[in-house]
Length: 252
Ligand code: IPE
Ligand code: IPE
Ligand code: MG
Image 1 (cartoon, rainbow, N blue to C red):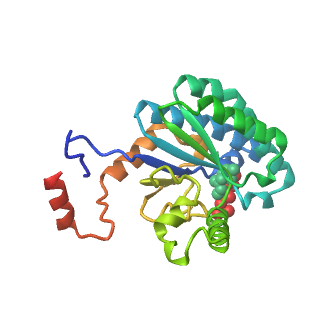
Image 2 (image 1 turned 180 degrees about the vertical axis):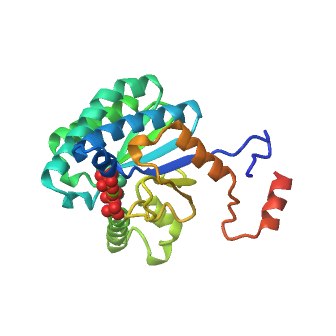
């Protein structure tokens, strides 16, 4: 089990990223419309954010709407847009009181003026908060993130402000979303699916991957604890061998 050398306490991830999946199946099991599953999913978000605040997790990124989700029936897409805005405006004061900093990542070019205003307000209100960083990925896709970075780099090279040789993994990282935050240490996907579905393709390169059959509306602190225990049991080698990690640990 990973333990921090200084306090001998179990190591917590700094950054947790979650694909909140299974809302539709949760509703179907109950003979309810899919929208009821999404609504119940918001309750799970509330529980998980609260638990992360209590556990003093630094960063949590939750995927609320993917760039491919526009392909869903129009009615469901509209509901997800409305639910996102309603939840943001309902929760923001409480989050602010909990010293949570809210950030929204994703392609904003397809969002309405009203949505952009809600997002700007939420981010502005909580910008100076020093507690949990709560990132909501909305209209987010890994391809979009990397493509946007590539376009920016290409434009910089074209304008002569960047040489081709200066393009390194570190530089690419600096053009992606969440450039100022560490990559997720722990990735969680609910509902039994074991795929990334175009989530944070660059950032998840070295994350520990945890999959659970629990459907997102049933996810809560107990499930989070299981994922944290899984994380603590992993040895993260980043290309090294175990013995090298022990050496680093001894010298820490
Ligand atoms: C995840 O649940 C929520 C969003 C994509 C917004 P789903 O809606 O994908 O639920 P399933 O996979 O159909 O059960
Ligand atoms: C990914 O879930 C998107 C979000 C959870 C926001 P999907 O349910 O849309 O993914 P696929 O289509 O099953 O891979
Ligand atoms: Mg799904």
